[in-house]
Length: 269
Ligand SMILES: [Zn+2]
Ligand SMILES: [Zn+2]
Image 1: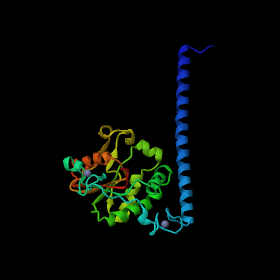
Image 2: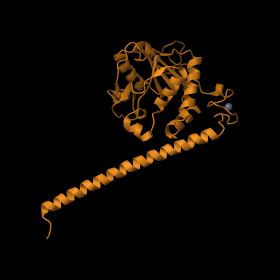
Image 3: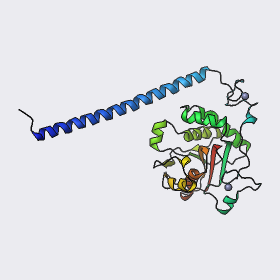
Image 4: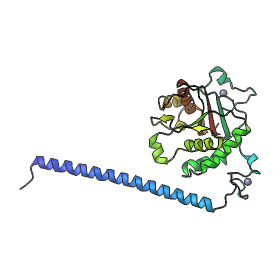
């Protein structure tokens, strides 16, 4: 006997649900496979790192525990001639740039160790897109050396610029959080990876104007605990206009932070 139209609809519905579940299982399966493959690749790279003698990234000649040997270190693109407040470069001898005198950012000081130029920019690209999170420790060591050389005041707490969970899922790690953890260990400062959360995914800042950057970030972050009377440094790999750091500094100050610095490895401008 031919099935009734109602039974037909039920059958179609059941088939749809089964096929959707199968799709979801396959997506989860692929994601899990990709995660395992990524982890295996990182373990293989870590073992290769341990077995291969570490060489200076500039001269490639000298065995060096750090990224760059002592002879090559002075050739790195150190940051200089920047406003102490916002970190932007400007051609003047005053401590603060005209923009900060007129309308200062929410953060109190910005320190970028290097200009975003080779070999630092290459290493940052390698860290982020070359799936090489183990590089973060060596880059953090460079930052520590410059923070100490420039007598930068130590805060009580380090927090990384957070990444939205969707992006974190895609990349597998937040490079700012890795730098933050290594800096905290080296400098013996407390760090809280979850103090600031990114609750909304935003368009890449790089394609936007300054005004668009500000509205793009509005409401994108949240602070999970009060920060009363604390001195905090926000950690990121690269500073561009400082809009992201400023938005986070605004929230930290509104939650009671006393002093907020921004520390980045490199600065693009
Ligand atoms: Zn060298
Ligand atoms: Zn300034």
